[in-house]
Length: 323
View 1 (cartoon, rainbow, N blue to C red):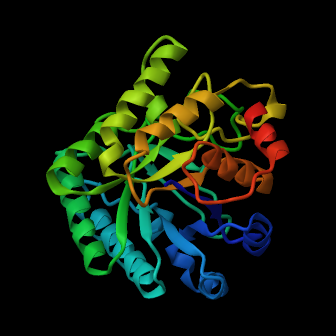
View 2 (tube, one colour; view 1 turned 90 degrees about the vertical axis):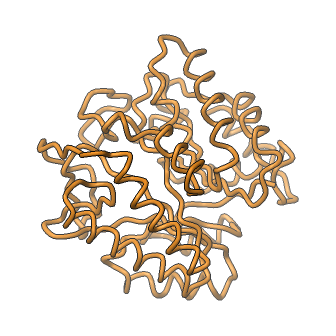
């Protein structure tokens, strides 16, 4: 059965956990601010809420950590930060650490404002990218096994997520390196046993088809081939002119007037691909982070016979379906 989880961060997390009644959560975890999560982790332990960490880290000069960088200094320091994150997950009995591999930008991150939208235009080029990725991924996979923590690699987007200065649906902007995609992760999973997070919006953004049907067919094909290696789903509705940015800036909100995909029926059919996969989590990746979105999302999974929750709220399911 697929188990629904809510995404939480440093703010309003108590309210979100209490009001949602979530039994699982994914924490947006900035390791440079580890001490600020102490109260949260104590609460999660006390309430026995199953937890995964979505890794974020910053090295010198506010450079985002990147374990798939040709610069060995950046790569080694990034790996050390991720290993520290795995240690923290292991000590707290958390289930996984999720990692989104690097991109072509030397991206900057402001830990105080928690703003990752700013990036300069200096491109980082990779040498033997697939080899470097496999080396880093296998090293961290084995490290996680020793700590009883699943290390998950999230399917990367092909374009940089839109920041707050861009309109919803803006497909322009610098692109992620195309060789680092779901195929790179699939190859490493088959050869080295690494585990994958399928971000369905990122997968759809890989498709260069000219029609909606081609994009949906691509999503189903890639999801089917990744399924046996997948331990986590990041689920969100994408805009039709998809830039792989998770419907940021309200693009997946019904009130925005922007049509979104996949539809309810498409999503339910997609979930059927995981009927034989045990222990799979699904995190609602809605940008507006409304509690009712999670409740409706959880009940949508249940309506597919994939979730162990026993209560329905038809009106809230309808809210999600209408988005």
